[in-house]
Length: 239
Image (cartoon, rainbow, N blue to C red):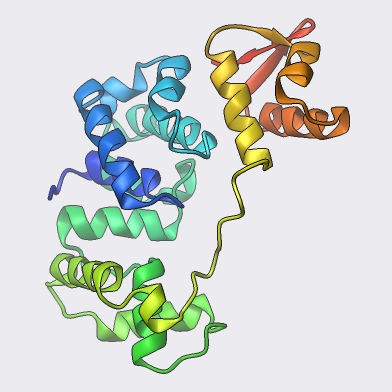
């Protein structure tokens, strides 16, 4: 366990829609390569994507690096200060910013992940359609002052290990779609190929084996997200 805000930020972004057992291996390798936010801010996008490959949702890796650049430039590398202004940090919302502040500084704040949501719904007999606002207000009322770090660690462990989805029947608010044959799989395939160098649309069409309109849609979305760029008739990784 760590109270290093940079390490907590990386772990929180890696854990978005990804199981803990998969994240651990990537997280440990990541920290060996880039142990500080300053180091991360100087790395090429190609290296970032190469290290992220296999975690899924590669746009998270791009946002993490963009966050590192902004934190270094606008907040002099102070992750804690940046979390107080999370609206300016790519990929960071209320949940992530408060999780970093809780686990790094033991701040009297709350955050509600999928495990905590499931616990509250089960223990308080709430409907699965309960609003986020109600859950966060309930979390604030339950918070033991000056024990936020311990409280959230305990809740998350209890939800992950004991009060599970299988035991309670409470499903996650956001459910991940099937990966095989999905646009997510195609995006991962495209990024993996682009890590080797530029490629044409025709080559991607032959490689993916999907319909032209679908590939055009996927590529345009990746361009819009600044994940890839077009150079003449070829696609390359951005940055």
